[in-house]
Every structure is written in C-alpha cells, then in structure tokens.
Length: 172
Image 1 (cartoon, one colour):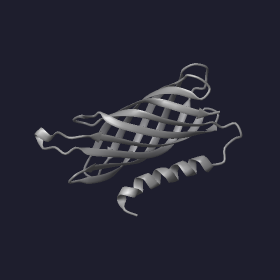
Image 2 (tube, rainbow, N blue to C red):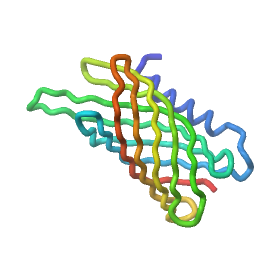
Image 3 (cartoon, helix red, strand yellow):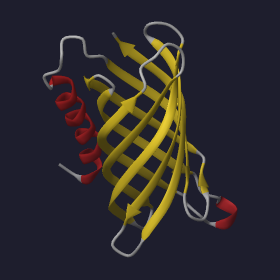
C-alpha cells in the first residue's frame, strides 16, 4: 500500500476496532464532524475538517478515535503552493454527564503528517483538550472544543493550538 492510502486505511481500522470492543449494555456511541482551525507557531491554517468517534466504556469515560485535515491553500503572488496537515489519534475522553451542556476533557495520542509539494514529514503528537457538547435532542447536538497539540518532529517540537466546532450524533 502506498503512503497516500495509509492514513484513510488507518482511520477505517481505528473505527472498526473502536466499534467492536466489548462494552457495557448501556454504552453510548457518538460521531462528530466539524470545522477546524489550526494555529501553527507562525501562522493560521484556517481551513480544516475533523471527524471523531467515541464509545462509552464506563460511566463518564469514553474511548475516542479521530481524524482531521487542515489545508493552507498557498498564495500564487508569493509563489507559495501551500500544504496539508493530517492527524490521526486515539485516546480517552471524560464527560460530566448531566442535563444541558456537557463539558468534556480528553487526551489523545497519535501521528501528524505534514505534506507540501516539496516536503513530507510525520511526527508523534499529543493532544490534550477540552470542550462542551450542547445537546439539541436525544441524538443531535453541537460541540465546540479547544486542543493544545505538541508535535514531536525529529528536528524540533512545535506547539500547535486547534479549535473545532461542529455537530455530534449520539446513539443512545
């Protein structure tokens, strides 16, 4: 398999493993899609999308898998072709279960792949974050989150920040 197909295949495998793990009879599964803006040390990557799947494992705890992509389109006047940043990760999420807005905190670990026309780089990432889910009904809601993401490249460690806002579907 070439490198281009490795990330989508990793996402599929992560989702399949997540969905087949044995869980308590009353466990919930949720899936979300959202707009993401990523701040790198020197600039913003304002166009991105994020997908996540979570499955409750015990009370307030869930396991989470996520995939995201951010795109910097470049600038023809500056002769800059742009780049893409892909991330895939998994980890745990703690949610304060209650009526109304549901705050959550999560910790993910995974990889980040940065691709430009002339360069590619892959690095380990950690991603602690927090957010809030606002249920609209039993199945649908809105989510907003803020994540801090240190990325550990061979040459350096970059400190990134990410904002995501989107819709979440929950299977009770």
